[in-house]
Amino acid sequence: MRNLWRDKRFWVIVGLALLSLLIGIQHNRAVQRGAANPFAEAVMAVFAPVQSALRATGRFLSDFGYGVLHGRHLREENRRLREQIEALRSAQVGWEELRQENERLRRLLGATQSAKARPLVAKVLAIQPSASFHTLIVARGKADGVRPRMVAATDTGLVGVVYDVTRHTAHVLLITDPNASVGARIQRAESRAVGVCRGRGEDYLVLTFLAKDADVRPGDVVITSGLGGVYPAGIPIGVVEEVMEQRQAGMREARVKPFVDVTRLEEILLYPPQVVPQ
Image (cartoon, rainbow, N blue to C red; front, side, top):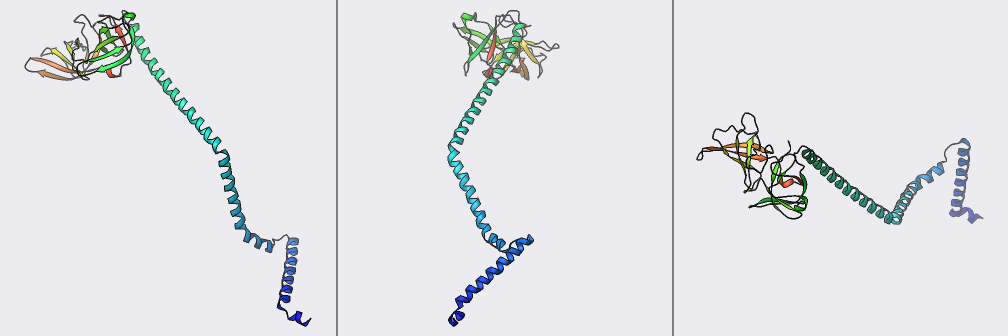
């Protein structure tokens, strides 16, 4: 018995028992008062970071598992959505193209309604500008009633003249061609000067054979004069950009910008010779 009282382990056990008893008494009193449990708070303080890390790890594993399980479905859904977007974009492009074509044909229809003879609407198949010839090919031919010397124009101005025809196509010599020429007149009432518009193989024309005292100014509108037996009078050709003196010939020339950009044509009108909208 004496050895027991001298044993340190015995007193450690007794101390721990007394400490546990005191903690239990303190816990019961705290619970009765509705106060917080100091022991529980200490335990929570120690284990709270561990629990937070475990929750974060659980969320990560849950998200990762969802991605693995549903990733294939999401990729397939994204592919379908991309295909739908591309289809809608293509449809929008097609609708816009139809809208523009409808607007062009509506303007051409307005020009045909005011013509003395109903012209043919011809779709442009090819544009062939080169150093020697500026021509275009349209999807109208002998089967449609197209003949050489028919006048090609749009609602904004002169394009050229038909020079060759097959059964289903026609070739048009553009006014910008070096071989093309058309009788022209200054539209301004105070002038009414006449000359000849010639192509230069460029995007402009030259109004030549003007009298040396011809009243021609930059900004003047140039129209067909009706002289020559092919082009009827009154078709808009272009606008004067510059007036130049020809000292040796004693005449004047003018640089003319055509109203029609022949490189952007998609449809044209074909009129019989000497017939034009009024």
